[in-house]
Amino acid sequence: MQDKIVFDIETKNSFADVGGQANIDKLEASVVGAYSYNQDKYFMFEEHEFPALGDLFKKAGLLIGFYSKKFDIPVMEKYFNFKIGAIPHYDILEEIEKSFGRRIGLGLLAEANLGVGKSGKGMDAIDFWRNGELEKLKEYCLQDVKVTKSVFDLIRTQGYLWIPKRETAQMEKVCLQFIERTEPQAQLL
Image 1 (cartoon, helix red, strand yellow):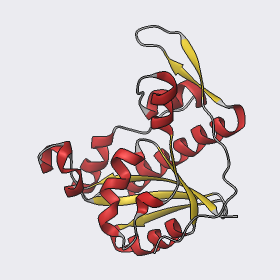
Image 2 (tube, rainbow, N blue to C red):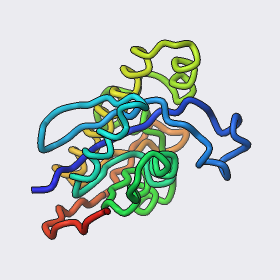
Image 3 (cartoon, rainbow, N blue to C red):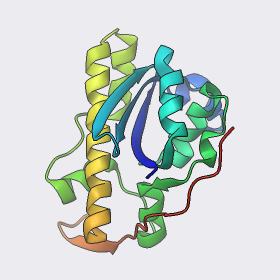
């Protein structure tokens, strides 16, 4: 069975540093965290280890992330000699937007469904990188991978997530579907 990989990236710089979101390809990844379902193992990759990350991605039948199609994938494309965007992909935020009609942050989503949140905010990761706090950066990234995996597991097992309504304490049940693919993936090279 082909692997499912949950992943999250952190960047060295921000949109403000590269002239806005239109220049997403100018962002540089600092670290990437991943979880392999086949190996039941978490991984952390620094930039010099991205070739090994590419090997992990090539074995994947599915990539799973949060806002990963519009952020993580465009940032990471330049690091590989294959089209990472060609790997089948389940973007949790994209699925929520389709079903619910609006976006929600991973932290709020995790708190509503798991009782735990993120360990910080996105700019913290850039600050960790700039301050040379590599271990804090890795911990932050790995926590996001763990939260993303747990949210994805809920989608797989129960078929819905609770989404907090804006400006109220009420929650809305949003049905989300994940159907396991059985056909093999085409070659990426």
